[in-house]
Image (cartoon, rainbow, N blue to C red; front, side, top):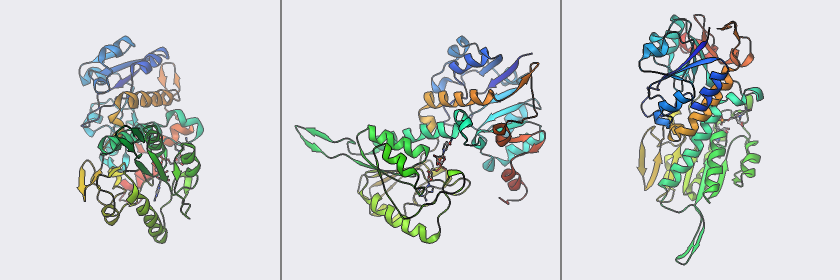
Length: 380
Ligand SMILES: NC(=O)c1ccc[n+]([C@@H]2O[C@H](COP(=O)([O-])OP(=O)(O)OC[C@H]3O[C@@H](n4cnc5c(N)ncnc54)[C@H](O)[C@@H]3O)[C@@H](O)[C@H]2O)c1
């Protein structure tokens, strides 16, 4: 018996990524999986059906053909309730699940005995690096943010010495130097800008400097649990905002990526700070979807204030769908390799620590404690 893996076309508007690519289909087929792709699933990322067919996948022209007999479903965005109803009980769904915002889907998966692995719950341990989809997609997002900043900046980014005069390089400031921030720094550097960056985790300083950018120092080190940032105290927040506002006022492009897992994004740029910026300056707020790092940000909108453009982008990884899909597909390929297949069937006693940590729903139970707490009345 062959384990069938189904890949639906993503349904969220503007989602151009696909959960697998032909190169990975070839590998999965060689390891004994049968792969089915929904018609047109890869078109938005420039992986047309014929490339999938050539790699050994079958194209399904309707949902019944896609899901009937499928043991595993691979997703980028969380599935919908309607889609869960199309699946056979016991199906394994793997992808980003964003459980806190999709409790209805989690509940339906529990009711329908679906097994769900949430990629955002994959622990950030060395062995799991190849499956770290948060990092691969943050890399794509950081790149896109820098390009978006450059495209909306009325200045050249590099220094130019021309017969028409000398042009000073633009200054790009990155707030939050995690995975996305570091990629934004590297991209802005390659475009020739002078780059400065700041993070509350002092350990980020070395990484920032190694990319050739200046690290802004503040007498705060807010490295919290698991290498993530902790929330600042009210006094620390005031100090931070003062330092940040001086740097923001001088910048031509500001890219903000500051996030604290499970919490609203911290406000680093106040309305008053925006008023001090140079006309033509651009803010790309990568934290827009979790509340924004700038007080004026609105997710999915471009705001003009005092000649400053504040962009609250949504789904930046989807702006480079070819490569973000490729990276994501490889993350999933590594993740699938953790599943144990015995006599053509998946062993559903999951014991690997990566599988255990990322298991959101299984056997009619929500396995992720914070999600269970949310479902039981909002405790977190
Ligand atoms: N496999 C691994 O070991 C692995 C993989 C990826 C990331 N990491 C680490 O995980 C950590 C978080 O990475 P991420 O990109 O997912 O982070 P994230 O998306 O949670 O946050 C982005 C950045 O914002 C920073 N930040 C939070 N509050 C801030 C504030 N008030 N002011 C300024 N900056 C603020 C954080 O320190 C972080 O660097 C980093 O230490 C990273 O190196 C480890």
